[in-house]
Amino acid sequence: MPEKIFSTSKKWSVIHVLLIGAVLFLVGFFAIQPETVSAEKSKGDDGIAQCAQCHDDVAAAFAGNAHKGLGAVCTDCHGNAEKHMAEGGAIETIVTYKGKETALKDSAKCLVCHKNTTGEYMSSPHGKSSFACTECHTIHGKVPEKHLLKVPAKKLCSTCHQDVYAQFNMNERHRLQEGILDCSNCHDVHAPATRERLGGFKQETCLKCHIDKGGPFMYEHEAVTIEGCNACHEPHGSPNRHMLKNQTVGDLCFSCHTGAPSWHSRFSATPTNCVSCHTSIHGSNLDKLFLK
Image (cartoon, rainbow, N blue to C red):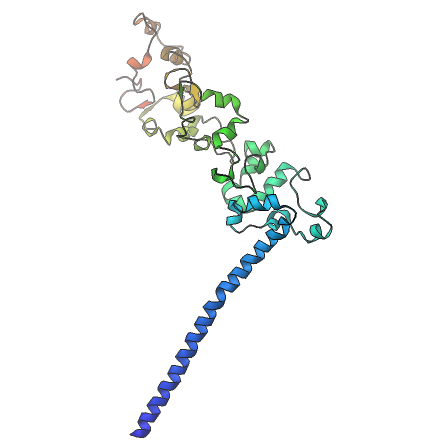
C-alpha cells in the first residue's frame, strides 16, 4: 500500500513540474513580445529620426500625418537614403518629386499603395491632364481635412473649376455652400469621366437623392432616358425655378416639342405652363402624354 501511494505521488510530482514549466514558458514568451514589436517600431522611427537631422520641419509635420499613423517611413517613397546621407544630401541620390520626374510618375508612386481605391486615376480627366496627387493632397503635413486634402473640397475644386463654382451662387442650386454636399457626391475625381455630363443612363447619380424621379415607368419621358436630367436642369445652379435651363416651362418644353399643336400657346395671357396638364413629366404609369 505505501508503495502504491508513493508511486502515485511521484506521478503527480512529474505532472506538477511539467505544468510549472509550461507556465514559465508562456510567461517568458509573452513577456518578450512587446520588446520585439517595439524594436520593429523603433526601427521605423529611427529611419524618420535620421531624416529629421536635416529635414526637421518635414519630420515634425509628418508626425501628425495619416501616413505616419499607418506605419509609413520616409524610405517607402524616397528610396534608400544611405548614399544620400553619405554624400551630404546630394539630391541625385534620392527619389524626389520636384521636377526630376513627371507628375504621372509621381502619382504612380502613390498608386502603389492606393491602387484599390484610385487605380483608374491615370484614365481620369485629372490624370490625363498630368495632375499629380500632390496638387490636391498633402503628403507630409498634418491637415484637418479628410483624405489629406490641402483645403476643404469645395474650395479645392473651385481653384480650377471657377465657372462651375460660380453657378453655386445662383438662387436655385444644390447646397454646396451650406456644406450639405461636396463635388465628390456626384463626381469621382479619381475615375474615368463616364459620368462627366451625367446624361442618359448616367442620371443614376441624380437618382441617388431624387429617388422618386427614377421609376420604373410604363411611359418614359425620352429626354430623361436619352439625354438625362441635365436635358432640362442645370446640375450646379440656375436663376430659374427647379434649376431649369429656361425661365418659363413652356419655353423649355417647346425647345424639344416643336411639333406641339399651336393652340397650346393660347390657354391664357400668361406664358404656357405645360405641367398644368402634363403633370408626370419624369414618367408615368397612367398616360403616355403624362396627363393627369
